[in-house]
Image 1 (cartoon, rainbow, N blue to C red):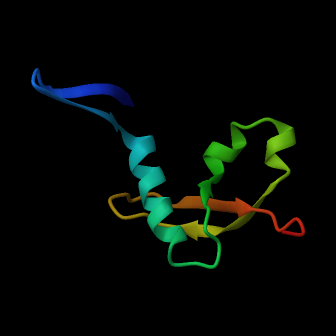
Image 2: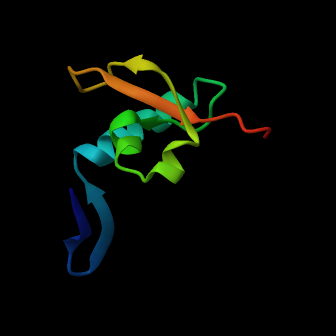
Length: 81
């Protein structure tokens, strides 16, 4: 992943580029089509500590646009919200 200013000297724009950014954008688009407004890959959840992981539940698997591999998806657990 790359994060930083890109562009010409008279017009810089801060941006992030990379696979993780693309995955997050695709999951954000997918979340808009479900009753769950937040989705996250299981791979990202696996990197969180145990206290955070317990707040997420697996919701299924999808093949995101631009990818050939399946992405396992989680959403925040319903905790009386």
